[in-house]
Length: 604
Image 1 (spheres, rainbow, N blue to C red):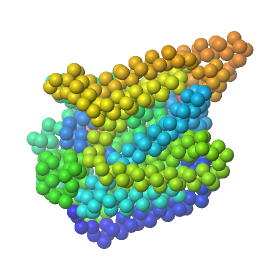
Image 2: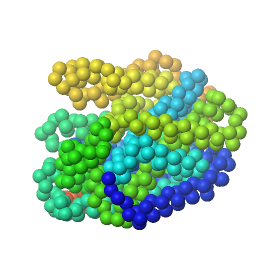
Image 3: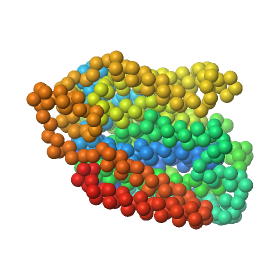
Image 4: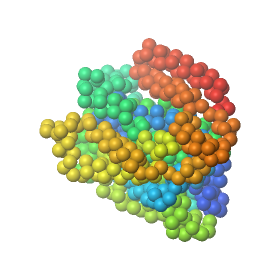
């Protein structure tokens, strides 16, 4: 436990006051209608939405997750989430335009635009509870678990106190400020959180015990963790950390903030943009900052923590008040913050509170948008007034905060839940990518994928089936095959179901095509059938090239990955590799700019 100075307390109180003030200022406008409460009237600029996306993914649990990964698998272990960049850039250049064009209020409303009948209604209603409430509460509980660990290490307070104090302020702000309040404060929260992360890294590296960057990288324990690629002599690690994420995970698994084809709170922000250009700009800005700029401060703190706390036993010895079920490598991040000087400590603690509030407020607003728009208004009270819808949104916000706080008290490890979430969405991602471009995907495709991946994941995580199939000593398959197994079985099931069930009605498919005008060959049969019936589509409005969009995505991948690794090599002092990758960043940027100028009327 650390002792905060008067200056630290002043900074934290000032921060809370400003955040609550913003929430109350915008509450009047946010309460006008459900569109204002959940999408701020579709009037947001790209830069504000981009900052909001980045701030949301900061999360109080993210630095703890990265610390857990680095201390366990080294810097290379981060490939489990670095590969989601491919998903993100696919959203930028292919799906951002389509989402904004759809004009829906939530991504779940899309189901009754793309599909028809009772299956579409069931899918929309069920996923509003499955994702908006159950899954959403699970994600929020992980973020709250991180806050509990930070509060226990830094302030010595009990888990229930963290849930009560942090949860109360956040839920009050979220319930009254709505989406506009979330986005406005996200801008401030991002600046504070980024400054706090950089300050934490600077002071951690320059601790006397660490001795600066050069001494840090000469430490024997640290030296084994700095490689940005796994050891290719260790086949099991290479497959688990690099090959599966690169070959399968990015397109096959649904994960909040990195949904294949866009979705969730990323889609919410794209739908809130002024127009398609602002939706594209926001998502590109988010992916660049999220992957290229932000990881290294956390990585440096994690590496420095290996010098101070080389193992979990040393953490337990330093913080005996932490319950045994909360001990883990992820505790090393808040433990390192104990060495910060007065004033800076207050700012960093405020930055962690900022990260927590940004993520929780976003998930509360996003989840309540599902409850209101896709469940209550759609199935319970279709004629509800705007005031009633806003009130239901506020009530659901409060209830989700309470339940997620209670669940957080029972959890133990951030990465454990991360792995479960990844597994639960395994095999569903390909549907979210293809449903825009292939007419044959129907509502039953999604229903079968959702249930099969969920049931298989439950069986593997909570029964002896995992030991039978993937046991280290006598399992039928190698342990690394668990994720591919779920993807394979789920994909086979939904493909079989797709071809065994009838396609969507011609009218539904034709209306969707007319509204969205997707590119590619996947809709030729629908267009040809419509033409035979005397229905023609205005192809002039289409003016969009899928191959060019894919090329822009690939160039952006080269640019951002090169920037990420160049930053690492500059920090490591490997200037030759850093210069090569920096040159690649410049070259990729030039080609990307030229491509965007060439296709600015089709993508932008």
